[in-house]
Length: 111
Image 1 (cartoon, helix red, strand yellow):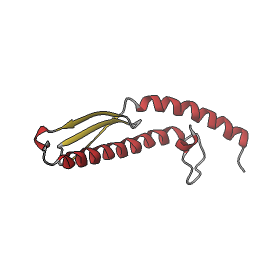
Image 2: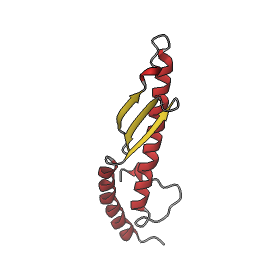
Image 3: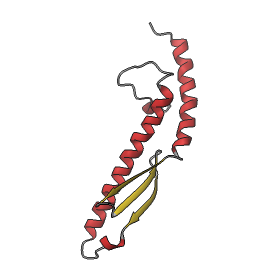
């Protein structure tokens, strides 16, 4: 049986540590690319885009859709990597504090 007093204490501890992790996520950078590296995107693990670099040789005024598609693909890849990295960092903090409840995603609880 779960000890709810202990569980709530651990939730408060997790919340404090999660806030610390969220601050740290701003300092973790991930990178992604599209078009064989023609478009590169850097983002934080907090899913904020830091930089988009575009190789000028792919800029074609007659085919703006290509550039848009490559930027979209690179940004989506960077955001996926950022989310995964952020989740890894959050799991490091919560794995020893919280009980293993399958399907429980603490990031959705505002922790």
